[in-house]
Image (cartoon, rainbow, N blue to C red; front, side, top):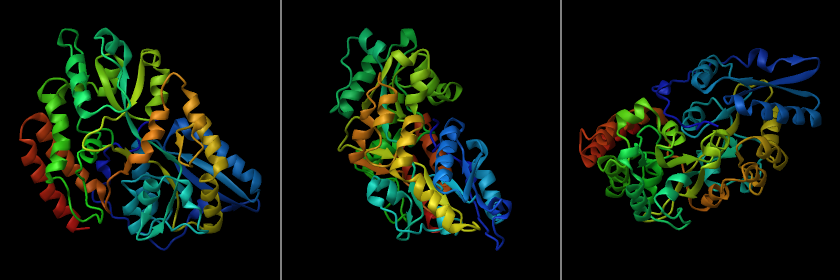
Length: 414
């Protein structure tokens, strides 16, 4: 499964002007049944979503579910257009970076029925809470680990990463694994995947991306800058490819070609690495190394209900089912890690060659993905300024200060 959090500049400046019209054909009744539209973006998950929809209809025969797949590249553009016209799907997938924008503009409705939120990791519940109200029930979750190439470790006679390894251990391994003669880098330090890279080291250093109230950037904090230097130092030492190399060939491809020894990636990579001819028997995963403290970014998709659905009660019933123990059991067998506590065993067993329990153990010290009302706006500033730092065009502390200033200006406009 692809990460749901790649930078989405298309949402920059999104203004959701909700009209008074209702859900149109998506909320129509056919043959006495209420038909709900359910929008998703992952083709790999569509079959299990259809299985869940059928299971719900089996116990709710008067509610039919139509699963609508829109690929990630077009999902948010299509959703924006539909929401602006008051025709958003009855139920749809939501991610953390976009959630505050949709909640604050009245596109989605708070969940009725007061579901038991204690069954999900608290950072995920918090991610989909706005002004004290819960708008989305977590469907799945993901954390970040260090996927490592056992073959390259063995060749250099380096022990595999321990569960309690540190930044110093990681940096030492990266230096020893780097082999210019064979075009091998110890790791990769891209700037375009903050969920997998800098957001984690910022938290591990004790810094922050955005203040808890969503009003202040943390990029000019010395600890945040330390979390950025973790990566820029690797590029400077040539233990990571430079930005041009990682633009020409993304780190995932380099890792799957045996040219990167340690790849910071998500739990969603288990399916990819379990089927790739090279990685399926060559790699394993370790927890993220500890900095000043342990931390990993946690994220997960949530199911939300359109504020304009013609069938709010039925839509809420469907979302509650999708967030249930039964639904999580089904999802765990064929999809990503289910968010419902205690239902992740089937996912772990799906790829027994990998130490996937790592991703579940990390939940205890996870921190939520940083967001604000218009995350996409400062994501663009973030990419612009940090590219200067990672390319060596500007010192890290100066780039971080410039980013903080721009980010604070953007946050003030929210």
